[in-house]
Image (cartoon, rainbow, N blue to C red; front, side, top):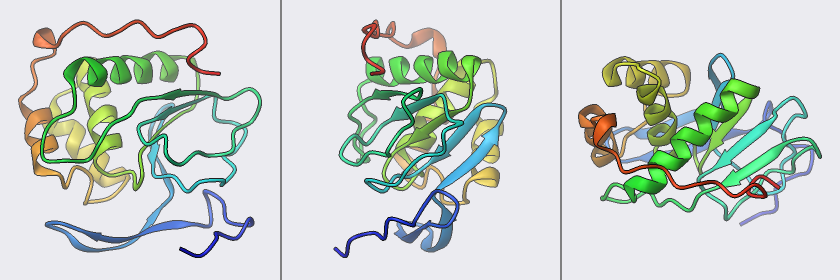
Length: 177
């Protein structure tokens, strides 16, 4: 894979590729503003994230943005597969998104910013009292029609009952360092 030029950034670079059920994705911005303090996107290792992000919830820790000294990173290892990730991890990550967005601009990212980030950002909004269908429509409108192209993730989010989720795990005080 060719090395990414160091002048690439979240404003100039796009995610490109192909997704099951959607074909050619065209060009999707590296990050997209969803609403309020919630942002969603993909990641390319070594690209600097703008300093105004206070928090990053990474669902793909194999690539990392370069963060400002004041930006906190929380990492969760999730896979984009034909099964829903561990529900306790999902609940914990979604609660972290809610906590972070209450404090300031927050980026939820995975590799391409479609499935894992869509699942966690979507669950955060559902936990905040939003309707799942409304949430999926919002994410697709603000990020890409290919958000939650993983049909297992989409079906789970549409059917989830937040009251039946296992309790979230405690986040260590130093998790965001």
